[in-house]
Length: 365
Figure (tube, rainbow, N blue to C red):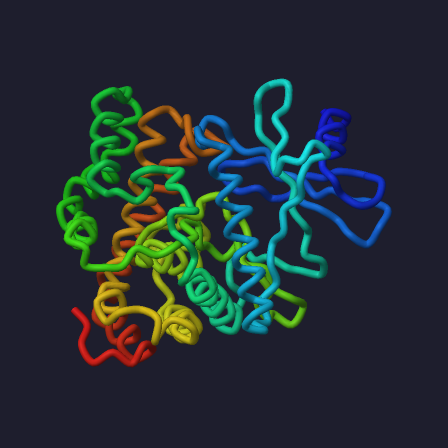
């Protein structure tokens, strides 16, 4: 296997001789490797999951175009943000298709960088907010038709609910019984969670270029916990800002990791929420419309619900989408998200007030 990966890595036009290739923490979907060479420059090699990503070339083109655009903006504005950079193959493409028709791409490795799965303090949360806010600022004038919608209806709640209902109708009795509480939670809250989709359908918000996987693990920090870069551009697409904002809060501002089964103690950390809002508002308070800001808290509710729903749907479908480490892993993830959502609902008045203050908005629903 390693020999095959080395052969694949050598298809890309990079400096130096490859010495070794090691696994990187690659999240739920793709396989990612660190390529070490005999130079000071190292690289990140990624194989895209062909089951999840059907239009892989568009995804790679999105990544390349958006990263090049962001890099040009960083240079023009003299912004202290580092950028991902993609490399062509020896035949001139930004991707390599292997014998199994799997697609690979290569990007730079940002040296001396640190990632966190869980925020150690409010400073890191503030820096993450600032970086994701800078992403919105740096892409504000990007030519939107250059970025393809590679995952149609990715955050479409009505469609996600339909997928859930289909999975529920086909699920085994054992899985339905195990997931009974989670299923009841979805049925109880699904109507309210369609509100953001309704607002979007009425063109309440502008369409922007969004990251669509804006979690803490996709931010790089230096040794002093200063933000360096936003990475993992696989899901960059046109969309509304609320899902990016909500996903950041979902993954950064909870007191427990996504896999924790200590359900009763799961809660949103309001001090972290405030820190993220302040960082995010640094670049976006004058960029976003009042309506966008007004409904940011609803984005938090909605994306937490969506993620719980997606985990639950995959569990009912016998775990065909997300990588799992044990039999009920996706059910644990789903329950985790639904308990987090309960905490968001219980603290919603405080969340709205913090948002209003951070963005200096007079009114917020």
